[in-house]
Image (cartoon, rainbow, N blue to C red):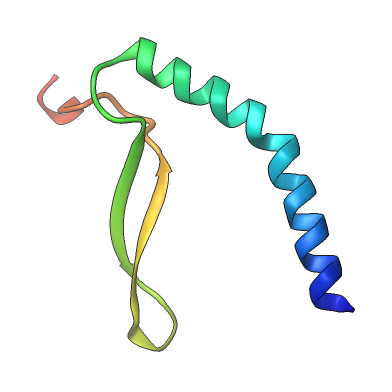
Length: 65
């Protein structure tokens, strides 16, 4: 029962925030060149690596500016 609740609530939250994600994606595309997402490999629980995805918040090659 808890699993069903978790799936339903998380699905509703994803649907609510989907328009915000789309707006952020377009803002990043129009603001600067480069991809919308930033990928980084991190170490998780028990030392297992995983790929972290997040919206890119800096300009491409910002360190050179």
